Amino acid sequence: MEHTLPFDYAAIERILPHRYPFLLVDRIIEFEPDKRIVGVKNVSLNERYLAHRPGQRPVLPPTILTEAVAQVGAIMILAKPENREKLIYFMGIERVRYRRPVHPGDVVVIEASVRRLRSRMGMLRGVARVEGRIVVEGQMTFALGPLAPLDPNNPALQA
Image (cartoon, rainbow, N blue to C red):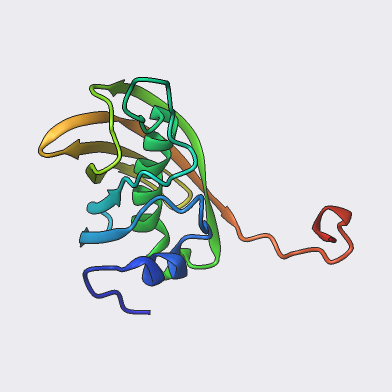
């Protein structure tokens, strides 16, 4: 599968296993395999996980913002042909700093760059910005594993 920029929501769904409401990346606008990727998250007022407090503007929780950064990095790793039949596991975060809140109406531009990359593990540096100002930054470690087939006998999968 050849990728052409920008990756829209449908192209992202072909790469990541996440689906609404857990798919947090709307578009990929830059992509350099094994080096760097830039994605966009549009923050909408109707997102169910916004933190609402009476008398204050709703805020995107930092954990959701961290997950959006991780998803942009995961797209870069899973877009490689040799990783199509794998899952990416978020293993840890280091040196994460939340600089300012993100509100509905904000357009978050997320950049992930490779710090270390091996066949089954790696480390990415992520930076998210709103209007050019950093809102979160940090390093994330990941591992690649096999895509587990669905077990039809698993009671958890039966409705």
